[in-house]
Length: 184
Image (cartoon, rainbow, N blue to C red; front, side, top):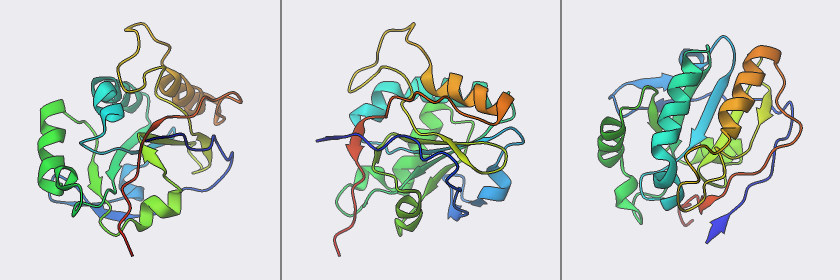
């Protein structure tokens, strides 16, 4: 079932972390943050919403990194019930798509809970001071990719944040598969 998270809580702080990446190293926020902002994405391997736009995610991340925006992707799904989202499969996914950003595994799901992540994809765009300025969609895509010339909502918002420190007032929420939480 599709989930739509709430839109931006302007000014909410980011949450520090240290998580293992698909490259075998530990990564923390201080290493990832960019001088002009930071994009934290919650994604996973099996979600059709993520798969529909994976090439666009990679494109936008690369273009944002060139503008001084730090980018990280995090998977927090329960791999016992969804083994295709496990660390080995994440590494294969990152290699297949040529990720230019770290892809981290939140095994405890504590970081996803701290951020309030609800779905994949769920995008959190922060300014250089670590204040949330964007929580919206990548573009008009849903379970299938939108038009090739679709407005790049996430990219445009992050460029605005990089240049002004503020995100757009009007934001359309993302939509995707729910985070696959572990049972208690």
